[in-house]
Image (cartoon, rainbow, N blue to C red; front, side):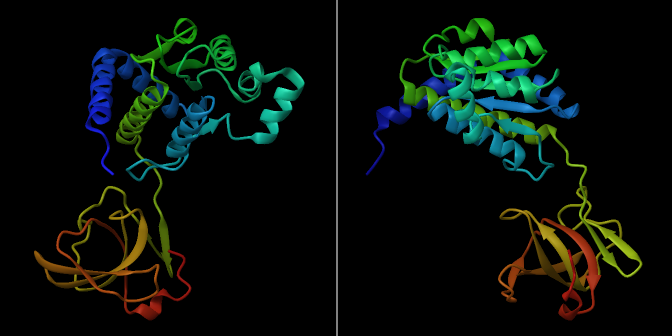
Length: 283
């Protein structure tokens, strides 16, 4: 079944309009998140229903990663803890399910990222107001005119639509856009180390596409590649500079299924004499 053209056209139109009308605010949001990340602050997310799922999605991309390999970023989705949510709702009322945990976990300089298609959810607006009082930057993705949230959030983007599913679809596009910009601006300081007797080899995140400080020579190497997500592999280098050929094998399947790589994108680790050297290796 094909997706009706009018639905895709409508989504594209609203996405284009939303980005066009909010370029300055988007940059302010990106700058605010960058500052928070640089200062090791926490990004809190929250929403109701479908917006809760998108809040979880955003936090998952931050704690995990989006497209690029980088360090994990501190983010808490306040929709995920069922025990706390039900306890707070039972003892204090549903309107406090986000403001209560924020008051206990948040600190000045953090960021609250709230999602609401209407902007009139009481629990969302309570969380935004608490964030403002605590010195936490409040950001809201909204729709349907923005509701009350547009008046209390420090930064907000309002999708110009009254269609709830469409608003949520545009919110997801915005989330992915923000994730891509975060990836571009966050450089991981982490390096994975391998110990080879008394010598130490580092997966250098600056050395890509076969380039390393010491020219490669023929032989077997431990390497990392991001071709289909980060994983360790073995690379056989054949020939001499600059006419090298590379063969990579899967370390996951345990088999040597050869795949020729013409233009490798590896981070090279230590050189090994044979496959037997891999026994007990922690890299």
